[in-house]
Image (cartoon, rainbow, N blue to C red; front, side, top):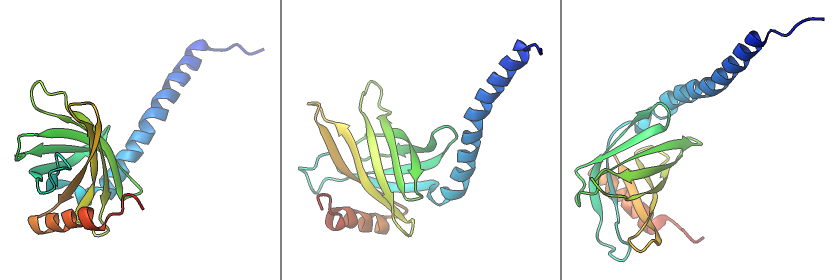
Length: 167
C-alpha cells in the first residue's frame, strides 16, 4: 500500500487553483492587447442626461485604456456639466462593450451600466447607459463615443435616427 503525502496533495490543489485562475487572466490579457488596440486612446463622447430634453447633449473627453483585471477602463474629463466618471468594461464578440461606471464627484453616489456597439469601421461606438434617477427609476440614455467632432455627429445621428429599439 502506498501512503498519501498530504503536503504534496495540498500543494497540488493550491497550484491547481492558482493556475486555473491566472491562466484565463493571462489569455484574456493577451486577447485584450490584440483585439482592443483600435479603441485605446483619447475619444470624445456625448450623452443625454434627460430624454425629455432632446437637444441637450453633455460632452466630454474620454480616455480608454487597458485594465488588466477588468478589461477596459474609461476615464472621463472636461464634462460640460461636471459629471465626470470612471468605468470598466469588457468587449464581447469584438463589437459589443458592456460595463459599469461610477461618478468621480466627491460625495456623489451616481453609478450605472453601459452597453455599447462598436461601429464596423471602429471609428465610433453607440449605445446606452442606464442609471437610476433621483426617484429611483431606471433611465436608459443615448451614449456615443467617437474619435472626432464630425464622427461624433454621425454617431449621434445613428443612434437617434437609425436604431430601431422596439423592432
